[in-house]
Length: 384
Ligand SMILES: Nc1ncnc2c1ncn2[C@@H]1O[C@H](COP(=O)(O)OP(=O)(O)OP(=O)(O)O)[C@@H](O)[C@H]1O
Ligand SMILES: [Mg+2]
Image (cartoon, helix red, strand yellow):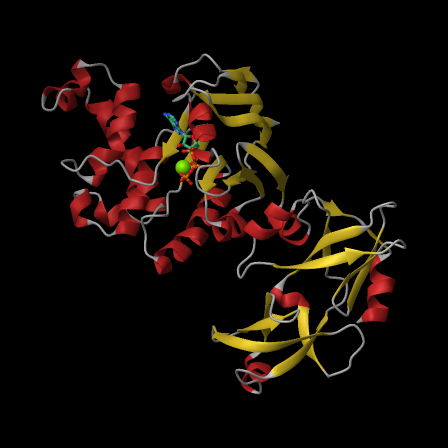
């Protein structure tokens, strides 16, 4: 079942078009990430889904019901922002109780002193739900603290808890981890993914951090300039980008992009490196070759189809070393991943030779679209 459906969404702010025809279906229980560079329209799309912003045109439906005109409070969605938006003067428990009180209690029952007396049972049930949620998030020992007495990660969990208590149809999250330090962000990635698995609720998650998108999502939509360029599972997006902008945005270190050429027979080459035969006929001339850092290996001088370059920088990340190599007469930089053992044998300034590993080149046409390759495995095996 489709939990959320956005169709033909357009959004203009004055004369500026920010969203340019977005179609997106999110399945029930899916973790879908909207990822893209700053300003590409991710938050605007999420706000339209939440009902905080109206689309200029297009339709939004949730659980099969059209909600384009429905106000945010009636969409049963929970939004978690980058700024946690917790009430500073209330404890964690009180913060988490607020949405339930607003939903389940009358005005009189919400009054500070009379309320709990008048509606003891309702208050007890709300507190019980808050405690259950806090246990899931491992913040049950923090319920009496105020936000100012919590660490960044704990505050983020309290904000999540406040969103969770209402048992929404879906969670909408806009860069919820970006205020945390690097180590905590990585830790919270796995916590969020685990939380999603245990809740089995739909998550729509916005980030500009491609690593977050790759590590947490079931599917990711790569957005640029108000459009979705590609939608797919993280593996698919990483290994099979259909557009050069997707290839460049996803992956760290970045994919190497080198100038190449296509001859009449469809052979793509870059310097001495013959890469593949492009399946599409009639395309001759300049192309761009995409090679990920892990898709190249050091080889002996004179190996057929190798590229030669000078090592200008070594980036040691412990488990891997990235060699930055100046190639094609110094006109381009190539980043190559090697093992620490290989890397330690290579010194700065040294001339090295690199070959492409089996089956791993991408060829992009002048318009930035990926070109299909003919018989990739057999042809590449000969070259490699
Ligand atoms: N209320 C507004 N009025 C005018 N322009 C706006 C408004 N809200 C957003 N924009 C513009 O719309 C574009 C998309 O903004 P949006 O906040 O959706 O980007 P984003 O992808 O979330 O970026 P970031 O990663 O920086 O948060 C930006 O160019 C922004 O300046
Ligand atoms: Mg944003």
